[in-house]
Structures are given as structure tokens and as C-alpha cells.
Amino acid sequence: MKLHWLKQYSDSKRLLLIFSGWSVDWHLFTGYTYPAKYDVAVVWDYADLSTGIFANMRYYDETIVIAWSFGVACFDRIYQKLPDELNINCAIAVNGTTHPVDDALGIPKDIFAATLSGLSEDSLSSFQRRICGGGVRFREFKTVLQEGADNIDSLKRQLETFQPSNEVVARQNGVIWDRAFISERDMIFPATNMVHAWNNSPTATTCIAGSHLPDFQHIISTCIRDKALIEQQFSASLNTYDENAEVQTKAARHLTDIWNIPSSTTEILEIGPGSGTLSREITRRIPEARLTWIDLTNIAPEGCEGRFIHGDAETEIRRLPNESFDAIISANSVQWFHSPLRFLQQAYRVLRKGGSIVLSTFGPGNLKELDSANGGISLPYLSCDDWRHIASAAGLEIERIESETMTIEFNSGRDMINHLKKTGVNALTHTSGHNRYAALKALMNSGNCRLTFTPLYLVLKK
Image 1 (cartoon, one colour):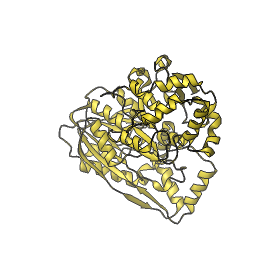
Image 2 (cartoon, rainbow, N blue to C red):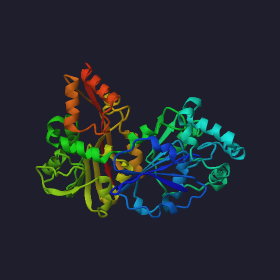
Image 3 (cartoon, helix red, strand yellow):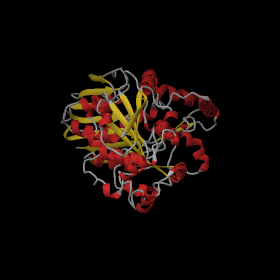
Image 4 (cartoon, rainbow, N blue to C red):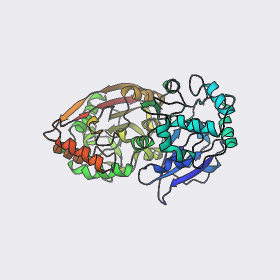
């Protein structure tokens, strides 16, 4: 394998690691915009799957992986050999499977064999055209697809790595993929095969329009959280949050209504306490409770006592000791996580036997009115079924999962924009370009001034 750094910062603690597809090197990924303060590296050339290129990487608080095409199978095979210092926290598969050559789960064997035996400069160009879904898009990407391309002999050796005879039996405790994107018009991996491949896993799948070469900018912007922006916007809204976050406050209070709190519950970890709405409810109901908080904002909740940890809960929870809490609670925070699945796995570890995870979050369709203003970008919300799958994969018993839909009506678009500012709930992008300004202005001038919220509630038990 080969590796090329697109971005490196002297103080970065987060890494985006991209595994490219066969015949495509790092040049394809130079034209995209990445979240601030993420190192970005691209891996390609799978003739040799030794992991020496990762040996001297520095310690990262978290690494997000986006693997495309044959890069999915590559990452799946080398996952357990990667340095622990990378701290893989999220793995996203794009138009690929862990069975890359398979008549039902990947590329049909006869098509793969014909590609390998007939590989030439002309057939490679034809393959790249099919990657793009046709001539128009191929002309757009032709330069970056062909720039730095390996020679035909090298490309053949890379294909041979994935021959059916070299398939690795799936591991029982291997990498768990957080999300898989499947292009509906993929001319390399048939979409129906990819759907079959991911159906029997806890991986949430998203079908998208387009060809084998997807809109990577949309995937990057959708799946990778700018944690610095989230901290900034929620910190700015702390003083105005309680009086404006009507839905979020109701959700926090509803959590305590549906949780049958055992009398033995004393040590409680709260994720993302914010202004302290849920903390105060818990303290009122369990006066003897000892709270520990983890929050991105550097301000502890007011009105109750506890131990405060300033940081990202997805990384900080890994530092907590085994079986140290009776309950883990969270109101309206985990939708910002890169990997709810890995969070639940860590929560299971730090919970005592019989302990509960009680949380509210939001499901698909939340704040759908803002999609146009955010350039079509939305958080990758999980459905109730998705949560059932990942809770089971984390070893948790499901006591309760429910959802509802709430709508807030505003007198004007300006009131709606002010609501978003005062609650911080639209911390998706720094983008302030002409198109976003026009979309926000249209919202402000709209006579249809409402926001839709889709709260989900979960009570899980170890």
C-alpha cells in the first residue's frame, strides 16, 4: 500500500483516513473541503497489504475512515493489524463490500475475471468511464483519475489481491462498519449485491443517487463532524438555550418519565449536559445521585453538584474505568457522534451489570426544513430500527425505544433563524456562501415558518 498526506497540522488530534478504489490514487481527493483541524491521508495500491505505512503515525484521539470500492475490503482485512494509536472511531463504506468478488455480495466473478484477463490501457479507460457513470462526468474527472495512475502490470497485481481464491473468511470480531453508502446506478458493484451484503449487519445503509464515483463532498460534509464548530455554537447559545429549546427540554424531561430508576442508582455519567436540564431532573428525583459530566463546552451545568470533564465524549469515555457507573444518560447529544455504535460499546464496558443507558436523540427527517439552506447536508440520523440493530450488536438489552414528531410554528422566518441561533442546533457547517445566504433569506421570507423535530427515546440495559 501507499499513503499520501493531503493535510497535516502540528497539533491535530483527529485524522480522516481515506482508502481509495482500485486504479485511483490520492489526486482524486485533492479537490474536496475537509473539516478544520483534521489531518487527511489517502491510501491506495493494494498489491501489498502490509501495514508498515502506518507504523510511525502519531497518536490520534480519533480516526475516521472512509473506504471506497475495493478500499472497503482492504480496510476490512488490515483492520486488526493497524496501530492502536490510530483509535479508529468510525468506518464508512462507500460503494464496496467486505466480499469484493462474489456473485451475490460483490462484483460478479465472471466480470472480475474478464477485467483481470483483458486489462489494457483501453479497457482501463473504459473502466474509469463506468466508474463515473458515463462520458459527461468522466470528462469532468478524467485528469484526476488518470494522474499518477499505476502501470498495467501493477494494476493486475492489485486486482489479484482480491481474487476469490484470496478471499479472507469474515472475522467474528472484525471491524464493524458504521454506515454504508450505496449508489443506485453503480456500474461496478451492483447496488442489489451491496444491499444484500450489508443487510445482515448492524451497519446503517444509505442509498444515494449517482454512479460508482459518488459525490464525496456530500459524504464528507454529512458524516464528519466539525467538533470545534459544535463546541463554538453550543457554547455561544448556553445562556439562551433553556428559554428557547422547547423540544429539547420536553425530551429531557420525558426521559426521566419513561425510565424506571432503580433505587441502587447512584453513580451516573451524563453525556452532553449542556445547560443542565436533565441533570436537575435527575438530582430532584435521586437526591443521593453522584453525577459525572462530559461536555464539549467548557462550562459545567448550574444548579447541581458533580464532577465535570471537558472534552469529546466519544474519546473521553474510552478513558473511564470498567464497570464504574450505574447509569449513563444523555439528552439530545448522541446525534452529533461519529459512531453511536462504538459509543454504546464503550458505554457497555463502563456500565455495571444491570445498569441502564437512557438517552434521547433525533431520527430521520429532523429539521428537514433546513436541508436546502445547508446545501442538502443533514446529520446521518438513525431510525428506531437502526438503534435496535446497534444496541443488540453492543450486547445491550432493549427495554424501550419510541419516537414522536413535534412541530414548532414561528411567526416569521426571522424568528425561526433566531431560534436556531439561540439553541445552536444547526451546527453543521461554517459555509456562508451565496447559495446558503439565498436559502436562508428564502426561509426568512417564507410564509411556511416551521421546524420539524423527530425525537427518539431509548432505554437500554446491560
